[in-house]
Length: 142
Ligand code: CMP
Image 1 (cartoon, rainbow, N blue to C red):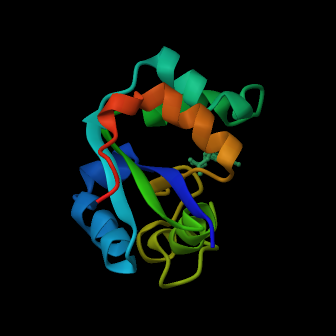
Image 2: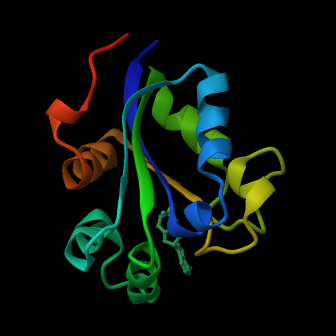
Image 3: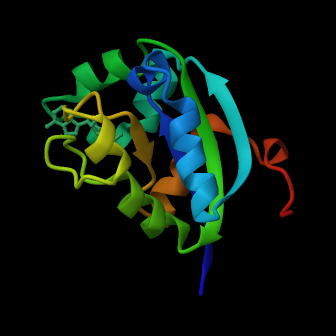
């Protein structure tokens, strides 16, 4: 048992489609705790920092255009093995290949417009968290 924090985004397509509540509902029902939550519109600079591991890839520019195309909802979720649990719940990156029952499997039909993002490791969480939050925006455990 290892309690972890993970960072989740509802991406601009998810916000535009009115899926914020649906996404949050799934994580709450699973038993994950929301420790921080906010709506933001990322600058290009912050977006490039957030996705720095993808710099140089053929889809990097499109990804930055997409993630800065509208507001996103960012949250820190906490729970036992939260990183892996949330990755399982969101499904494969490509919505066309994601299992039904997962968020992307149920709501996405694209590799880019795939509704949500979640940290893939503790290292990614640490980097992503610093781009979007400060520790004083995180509520104590409850
Ligand atoms: P995400 O989980 O946020 O991590 C990086 C994002 O880049 C990914 O979701 C997709 O939105 C996007 N992405 C990954 N691979 C590709 C690709 N081959 N073409 C376009 N976008 C991609």
